[in-house]
Picture 1 (cartoon, rainbow, N blue to C red):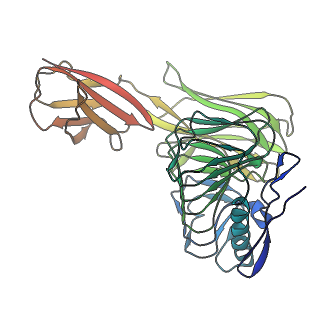
Picture 2 (picture 1 turned 90 degrees about the vertical axis):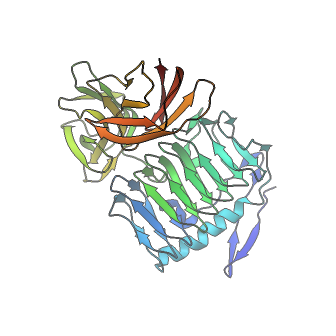
Picture 3 (picture 1 turned 180 degrees about the vertical axis):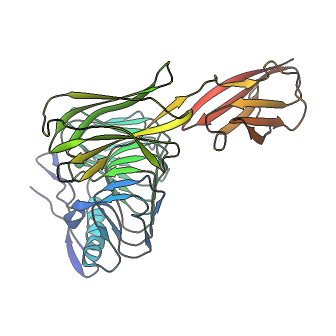
Length: 410
């Protein structure tokens, strides 16, 4: 028997989702929200920087709206008080509330990383903060409802992987708190959130971020509403440095519909992009695997970012997430090494302004370290006192990647 729940809010009778029918989980009814990539019923909407690209509608019913520009929007802005925003505010509350009474099929740990979930209703029932460090795998065709009784934070480079028929349009998270996507996270599904939504630099979402009450903040992100199918199915996009100081760029597609062509762009800061090259005069439609190549003959030294821009025959544009490349004429390193112990060093890095450092003794004690300047693109460092003879470890974090240098003091 199908079970239907009724809730009343804002003077309107709201129909909840049907939970299970003959063992099948039913998706929440998003109504007008199906066209939205982001919406909040009550909160500001802010886009930081021009590298953000969103495919889908965006808006807020109550709060300041600042964005597009900066950023690229392939969709509509729904501003406070507009009929679309008023309706969406009602619908997001209905959708969020409809999930609350749905019975759980299984309990999951507060750390989602490393878990594999199958279709059905999965619940994190504790008040402990929910985190995703690494990969959450969703496996199987069917509806996934993941109920989290706390805020959700994903770590740098964390991701949600869909396998064995799972699709982003069948994945729904209910988050009882804020939702924060870490730097370069790659996420899938619709997030119905009782709090703020923040996407850190480089995070991507194939789905929606919908809040019943909280600000939405974007930072150089690529987001595509799963209700808006992309004209090109991109299998891979890579940029690889070569020995002759060029960068080889390659991408593969599995489906192309009304495709006019591609443009590859390069950036130093994920804010301003320049054209590297383009591929046009191709068949507009294809259902076979197709691989394309370009070579950047004059790449930047250090870190640079490459992204792919695709244009339809009607002029509509899709921008895919950027990938990073590092070219150096010199190797990474800490100099001098060995050292005489005066506490002054030079560190060769790609991003001296933003790099995060840690300095430790061989037994793991954290030691103070100061950045004293930048010289020829290298970072000047100084400890607060003379170092004793021995071995020390310097940790370097750039773009979410961590490496270690071993320092010997004689």
